[in-house]
Image 1 (cartoon, rainbow, N blue to C red):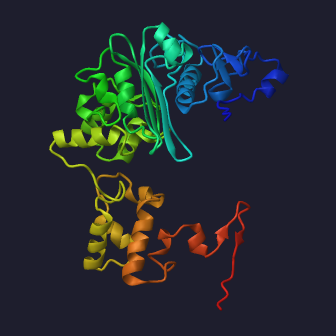
Image 2 (tube, one colour; image 1 turned 90 degrees about the vertical axis):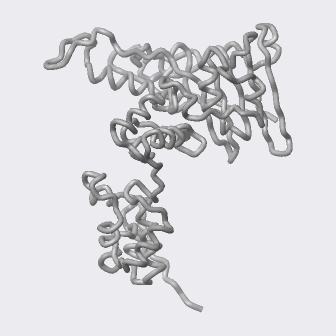
Image 3 (cartoon, rainbow, N blue to C red; image 1 turned 135 degrees about the vertical axis):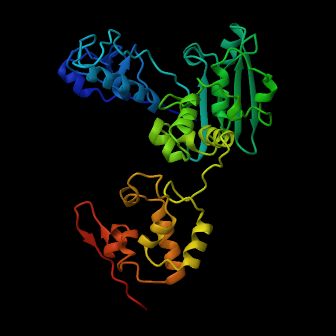
Length: 371
């Protein structure tokens, strides 16, 4: 079995233009994402920083942030009109390689306390023994589960590889960034142990969104001070979840932090079908049935979160979550023609014109032939 993994930078244009490229490919950049030509910048998979081309989304976000700040300031330390001088130039210092992916339906994850876990091959059993490290391996062949955890002589978690089950990835990652395991022992981190942390166990500076580098403290602040009580509101306020989205899933920390923080404030977690409707589908169905609501505008007037969203009508225009639900309920209850007034705004383009819209802007129609 031969497996080839990784990325290869598409640096042909840079080579043709005489821009410096790395020994293993990629446009060579400095800590400000600047190439050998001071007017050309590079980031993401095509950039080679200290000989490393990152093939992950989180480093790309970090590099983009550095570049955007440099563009904003234009010249570092230059006094801006009406703005304070910042003599410190925003710089890029490399990225964490920890990541969680889903490959062909299988969860895989790799995490480390530092890049030494990968570059110094802490995960290699032979190399680990030379360094006095302890490698633990768990394999469950019937379910296709594999877990390798690496500990220092002081029983500090240095990193690990997870295949098949990565639900406690964020908990393990945060533990690897700490000097001790806290109130846990290595056995708690094995499959079937109690490695999962509650939101209350995390410190305020613990990262809960790796892609956007959002901490628990920022999420809690958004809930308490910005009145965010749904995942979409947290995403908008903190940018958490706007990368890979893993942190806002049920296995991520953000839903747990949201629930715990709201409960500490005497509130209950939002359970509506979308940020605009504070009702479950079953509840919404009963409201529409009892009040005999026949159009989308009537449903919005009776059920939407009035007062919470500044421009509710504008927000509802692009809501891809609640519109199909409301359309389904109205069709189930009343069986009206879906393109008539009051219902047509619930349909997408294809349903509205009863045809499939092509990239050219034209429509294709497949006639129905009975028999």
